[in-house]
Length: 388
Image (cartoon, rainbow, N blue to C red; front, side, top):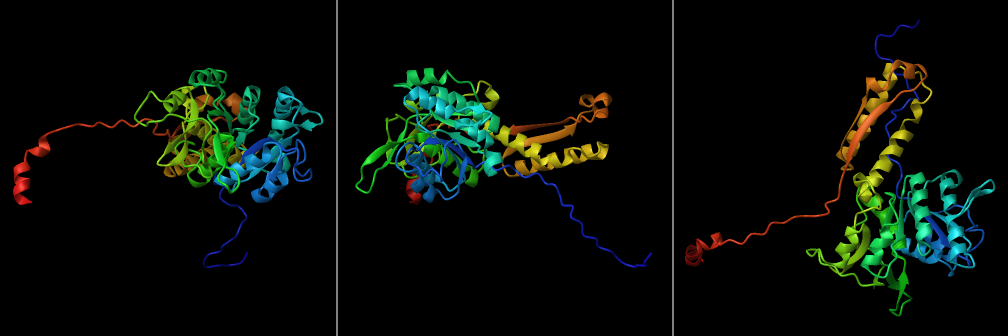
């Protein structure tokens, strides 16, 4: 044995296993594009788009893909996973193509997004099929979003506020946000405008908000880029409850309004039946937290189940909850080991249960301001005149 009067430093490859928040600014887009380059966008195959300019050219002018990519590109530069589907001979056939299938031969349409992580290495979290989102498609969007632990965005359908509210009643999924109406964008350089699905712009803005502010900020009240107007005017007054915008918001439909000359999405609600997930931000916080902690605990699986392992798991989750609180992503959170939930017979067969709770950050949806009129500032009127 060698003698050393001092310190020996040994480098190891073991590093701290801090939990890393999952990537959320990833868009999943299902679209038609009959004129697209087949090698760039093969049918029913997830394709990762990182160069949106080239993708817009490759998409061709037909179908919904090019306009959706243009709308997304106006808002953000973020990964977009595209699944191109072949349009059908009628609406029903197109609906079936968009909804897709899960067969032995593979997944098609929206179902192909479920395999995106395996195919392109990225999981979509912001999902839509702008221009194709009929009621059956919207229902399937919500189901796929739930499986991906993401949010789906779809248009609300109806000729007036009553019909739109009735349409909203068809859904009860927290993973779905309905949007009305569509927007207009510039068509060429001569100043003309053309309609553009608001959902496509919502996908891009949602990814931008994730990048700049975070998943805990809702889509609402952030300026849109590259839009010229609305396809249907929406009455709005921030102090008036009896407006189109407020009626739509009360029916859990996100609309668009103009504030200080800028068009903005206005509304925070999902279609969820559980009031705990009324807000888009609450749903996304639950999803992000679940995936972040689950994926961050992979290292612990199959290790010897000792008390020190349980303590380590609890402390690492608590550290992540503290970090998220400091970042303003949570109001608070706590993780603990519950002895009552871990009886000896379960520990004996390798089953450990760790509990945690948290409080998401709600949006300030209603601000009450109390305005009072008083004559107290007239009391020294004469003195102010004399000293002027």
